[in-house]
Amino acid sequence: MSTNDTPPEEPGASQQRAKEQPPLEPPAGTVGREPGPGSVGPEPAGAEPAGAAPTGPEQTGRQRLAAGLWPPRVSRAQLIVAVLLFVLGLGLAIQVRSNSDSSALRGARQEDLVRILDELDGRTKRLEDEKQKLDDQRRELESSSNQAEEARKQTVEKERQLGILAGTVAAQGPGIVLKITDPKGQVLSDKLLDTLQELRAAGAEAIQINGVRIVADSYFSDEEDGVAIDGKKITQPYEFKVIGKPQDLEPALNIPGGVVQSLEKEQAVVGVTRPAKIVVDALRAAKQPDYARSSSS
Image (cartoon, rainbow, N blue to C red; front, side, top):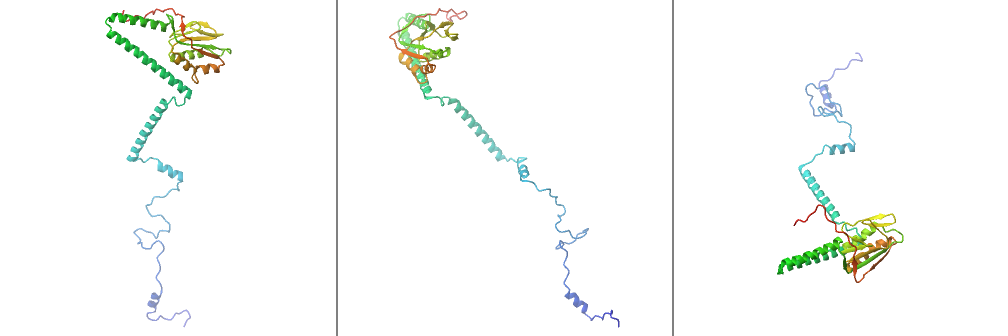
């Protein structure tokens, strides 16, 4: 007997070995899948499923933020809220602007506010007095038996008043005398004009400066060594003769931050007196209009 010869198997030995041998496990990735037609074998581990879109490189945070903001996705509710906020902001801006325009005096000094208040009170009182005079004239005309004569008297009185304002007639009455001495030569035409405007605002009815009658169209100009009024040169001391209510004129000049303090800052010497009677006798020639005519003629 040869050593390579195997002894014959006993009946049933092959079946016994088949039972003892464990079954083979299928390859990874094929569990639960049946090979479809045309499949060539199991898919490798980690492979993307068929039909999936390939993923690009990972985006940065800034790119994701930009992608989320643009293009904008605005809903109807967000659009309504934006419109309401715009209308609200526009209303607030208009309100703030109107408040800033109407509050020009908030930054003014206390002295300026006091001066403005005094001027307003004085103007209000003068307007009330003028209204009272006009009412009295109307009542006199209505109650007078001879209305023509009463109208003539009132016309003459009105002519006299207009003559005083125009500087064609002399005037006298209570008032003040303001004298300005300027040793440093710092008081120029603008300071004199400010003084005149302050006196007019305080109720001055007739003014004369160094023999020059002041009227509505008077003007000031600087000269080489002084000041000129309506082309007439005047020299210091500058003397204002003012007819009006002294109780209104003098306080208007002496209020804090007013004319007197402004002139004293220029090292000028200012004096105010109250004579018993002021006479304004400098006259202006009556100027005839070239084109204007009375509508009653």
